[in-house]
Image 1: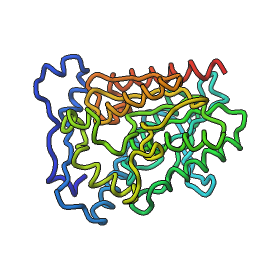
Image 2 (image 1 turned 60 degrees about the horizontal axis):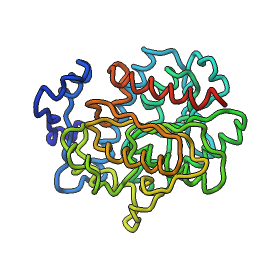
Image 3 (image 1 turned 30 degrees about the vertical axis):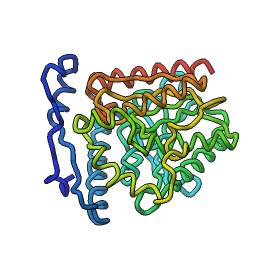
Image 4 (image 1 turned 180 degrees about the horizontal axis):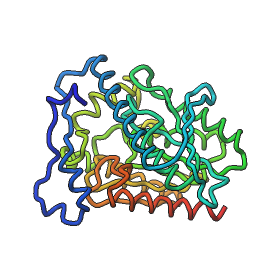
Length: 329
């Protein structure tokens, strides 16, 4: 983010020995990262939109890079009056001929595109088409618009593909939108996905009270204690919203019944580590089939780096989870 370059800080490495069991690729990435602490004053709308444009330019680069790595096609369409990108791999993995994906991208609720690397990697590595939702961003809209838009797309897909297996997936802020959407879908007695994937999900928008919110501040590649309220949370949530409402912070939900088997992935440097751990236990207590993957040295959204061994291992474990819950149906 060029407009924030004066606020950039190196990610903390207190002792090189703490990286002894990380791959060289992961170490090099950590050393190259800078995170951004925003000024005490609030960013104006122009600066916020500039940050969005710069992030979207980076995602365009990622799209080009993915096309160099994989042969796949993309198609922009509209479902339930919401923009959706269809990511179609060249080869469908045997056994996935009857499977589709439903994906919600990250970006702090105020940036990001449906052509996100997490979705493109899953589509091409696991070999199934993904419908990635281009939900409305903040500050133009507030909670719960993105959740409601995503739910309408999901409903339309279940009607269009009644016999297809469905994998729901998300990363970061997309996790809040997805998990809240699934809770709404369950309350409406809709058909649920057959498996659910949450990469480093933002499932507690209260933030305070999470251990990793404190000890990973400055160790992760984003500075949550400083930036989340200034840039992401305040843009997304209306002033009078209850952040402990389970549809706002799904970590507080009571999971039960036919909520889909869910795998969560986080890392020891992830600011959302505690949120993932707490959500895992809530799912476990509700009798939901769930797994928690914690990567050594993993930072926020490290799972979508194509060449880092730790990220490759995480995605492989996710695909094994999907095999377990899809191939038996």
